[in-house]
Image (cartoon, rainbow over all chains, first blue to last red; front, side, top):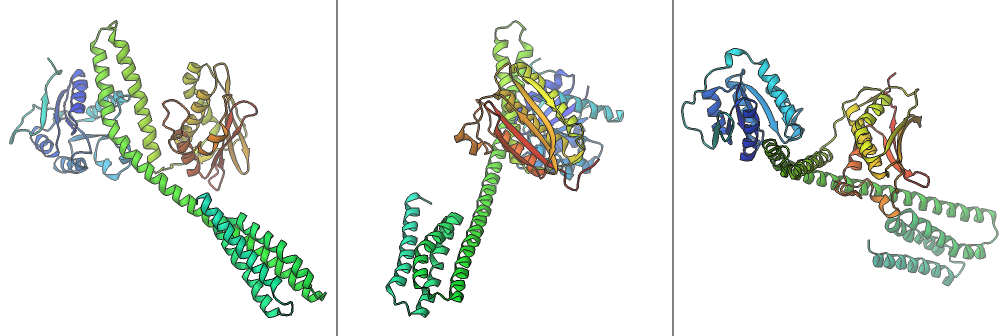
Length: 146
Length: 341
């Protein structure tokens, strides 16, 4: 079980990802804007961040840079509709890149497992949300609807 | 150019030629210096003919001028060999200029057409790309939620069948979107040492389930002496898979799609022959155009992508009727300096 943060401005997709990943046994938090995501990551240090690049323009790139700048150990998997950025040099900062596709969703699950397996155990810790409350975020612990 | 305008231009040139020839016949034969000027005037309709109608126009003007002027020139000839030679050389020069002008104009027109086409394709590509990206997210939500609902329902629930259709159709739309994105983006080729025969066999393996479903048999006749080539294997496979998929879809059940490899014109040739209904005369010109499709539910981008991939490798793709039944698509990849053994 890992704590996964989904940063995507599309609420339906956040909900879909959350459902799939909670079914896999993960604790999932969904956030829809860059600023809240930055705050949450800083306070709660999730095990993995699924980051959409398209957040209010391409703010996702800046979020990625900020996350890695503050803590290079934070695992980030880029989840985007744009496969054209797969070879962008900035992608090298992230731990993975996945192009949104419901047909290939199992590939995402495998990628998540691979990244989490690479992760040092010391990074697993309790969720602590400090500072300002989340804006535009949803928090789901355990399967939705239970 | 509208037909009406073309006629006006043709009539203008004809009147101009008639006027110049008239000047010869209406002037006194001894006015040699004036005749020299009149002969130069013949270049005017030639330039206009080439400019407005290309090589065809230049040849027409040249022929008409020679036919109208020659009887006068022969009639006025004093019989001097030098004068005859002069007239002949001037005639040859006129024909040469007509051909050169016509060819240059044709070349320039082609360049202009290609440029317009490239600009149009780039604009279409950008628009397609934008639309496709916007479609990806809702498609993922539709297909994803449908899967989740399906998982929660009992296997024998009557709604399972409907959900299966939603999932299947969303998957089809997603692959269409992928095709649109492939078409919209500039192609990056990452060449590696590739055995084309092996690639063909792999692609046939990938296409087999689709062929089986359509009741079509896939066959390969491969040239074992084919050298390895430096090419982007995954892109070449994508192009071939597109051609095989089209051939399978075009062929009626029980027929066979034949894939062959050979060497020709300093390169390798891959042919995909089907036994379908062929391509109608009126459709041939549009086959490689984006969004042209005769298939229900097709994006019409598949062959455009094939062309893009083949041309990125410096190759060519074309098609020809396959005897009385079907079509053969031929792809030629050059060896170039990149040839490896």
